[in-house]
Image (cartoon, rainbow, N blue to C red; front, side, top):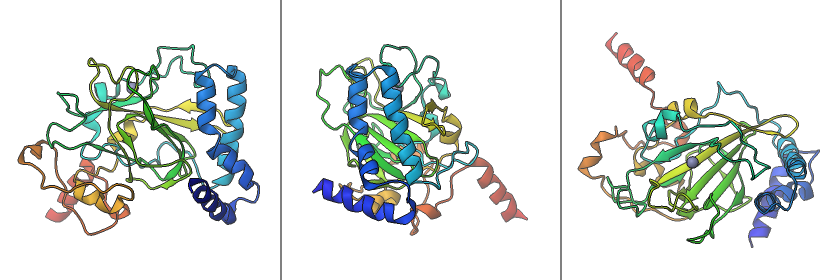
Length: 301
Ligand SMILES: [Zn+2]
């Protein structure tokens, strides 16, 4: 069933604008990216072999999505934790350590080319202490899901836990989300910015430890013309991200498992709430201080 869905989806996609990419090539990425990650993790490929396979896949994706462009100043993302904003990013962005990172070589340790985004969860049950609810992970961008892990078992030494990789069809890069409790997307599926893809969780060897606070681990990799990955510090994007602070806004973006909408408790006041508009996600203006200030100024004039 899933395979038929993937096939149909890609058929439609490839009809559009991809004379140079065949179904078979596209499916080799959709069906092969997770295996590549597993082979790297299990040392079945040398770093160079892994890089070559990765490059092939990325070049196929780039050809299949020729309108994707990377321009760090133009990136507009959706903040990935619903009900939170950049203030939840660990260490005010100082947790990002790209030095020594090599996607293809698991022996290299010590880097953290990512931001960890924390929720308040004192009893570590993955529910937000302010609301009593699980926290949805939203896709930061439009894209295609190219790998997911949904079967992490407690005790497993794998660090990512339940994870998602998404190819960003706007910037031509990759997003990696780790440690989720539940995953709501499947490989081959398209996602839109702001769409619920998972719940924040504590899966992964370190993330499951009592010493670890509940968080989302998120990496963005820019992909160059040759298909090489380079981690990017996304703190600036997270600061300017569109924020969905009220669960009622995201309810229409909920394709897989409906969330119960409850009245927000009084103690959520610390986070500024925005009114639930009767418009689609795309029409929501990013909440930026400068903008609201200038709007106020305009209103006064
Ligand atoms: Zn992390």
